[in-house]
Length: 278
Image 1 (tube, rainbow, N blue to C red):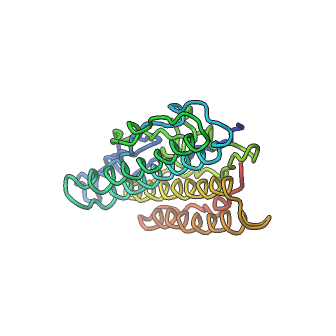
Image 2 (spheres, rainbow, N blue to C red):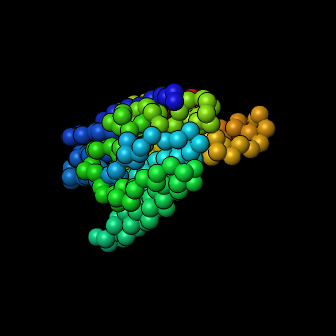
Image 3 (cartoon, rainbow, N blue to C red):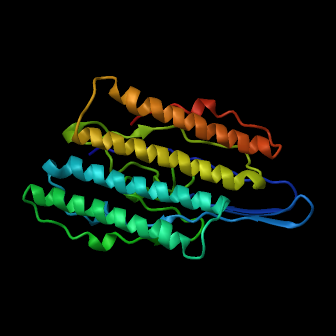
């Protein structure tokens, strides 16, 4: 199965006054002086640490391949969604000390259990031996700055599409083209930013996570099309790439506003909204 390629965004940090910054693909850690000389900190966002599934599967029969790919895309979408929540939690904390366990990791385990069961059923339905994937449902948290391993690019999971660590630096799993029903993936420009002021960094990181979630959602739609084709020749443009562009325009605009709000020069990110297909 051919592999598409995703590009990696670079999030560079800058600040006014004393600034110590540490940036990784999966998180952001900052310490800087406040406006009046008082220390001000921006918490780093953690990412979910889920076992990869693709590398634990036996050989996938051709008749089950499209369904399995769809479910692997679903797993990656959930990782992207929860990483976005963790990024926003770093900006606006909510809940008590058990919030992450109860509101993020617990529901994520339940969703992964359902998806993994569907993968097992896909094998069983065509008479292949059903794999036992139950142990792969439970996730924990990475330390700040550590990216999430994913199934779409498990061999290159050190870099995220937009610095949030969700999507990997290669679409090793989702395929390229339609051979054998293999789904295609979206190809979006990386978001290269100028130095991000410390006061805007957490918001920018949250929006980069949102961009990653949007990509993961679009990839799931494409995986579903490989299983159950629908629409005419313009369906992908009208139902996937068009709406994705609109969502990216909004997220990129929020990044620009985050710069502008703290008095920094507003970057022009309009050209990064349009995606194609791998």
